[in-house]
Length: 316
Image 1 (cartoon, rainbow, N blue to C red):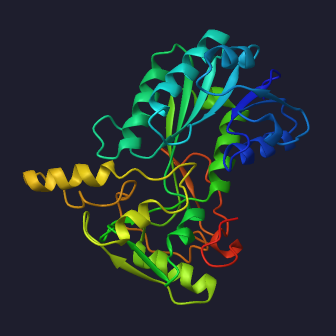
Image 2: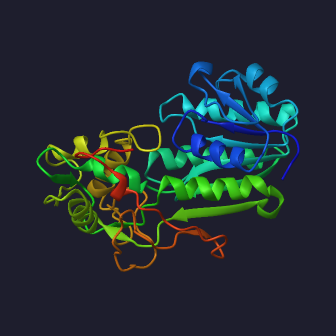
């Protein structure tokens, strides 16, 4: 592990905070880049500094003397497209050698999902920066699934028969901490972080209902139809921000053109693992094995996420 401090952004959040705790427990010196010093975690060996993404001068100052940095993507809004390059440029100017970026599964310039395009643009900027890099592309969080359930015990949305290998935040943090502890072994690698089972929304509804001791069902709604669509997509935030509706507008436009693409083109963003995995008793996909792909590097156990929930749709 490096003797210079490891920089972590988003340390007041659910991913960055978990990563900081893990590295601090291993005795790593840390520099926590935050927007609010009053919310910074008090961890052994950690120094908190004020460095919002958009302020390149503060970011460069905060990253001076840092060789390895963990960049958690900023909150999902229109400003993020400009904030990310500013942060990357400041990191390169400060002399950061290796940037580990928390991206999103399926990041691509051609994606119909707005945020996947945003992440692809950030990845491209990092590649061109001259720094070594590692991209961790996570998907939908298992922790988020109970929040999709309405007061009537129904999950509504345009998921169709799409499937998603939801992943626990704890597993993402374990993977990120492992990469940051030995970044050289993961240089110029892109990892997709998933849970062990590709679950339909019917599977998810059944599992959430079993864990919470009530009946939960899934009602499929096609894009553009039914009151449940905006509610599903604007539920408690996924990974720090709400899910964009652009993907559904894009899909409606494609449908009008007759450009439906491959089977499953209308699935929710982040769905469609290549093969159907038998749904396990998820309790976030309980007791199963997660993975860092490619090459199934460093398998991480998937924790009982849904089993730790309390109340209806509560997220711990």
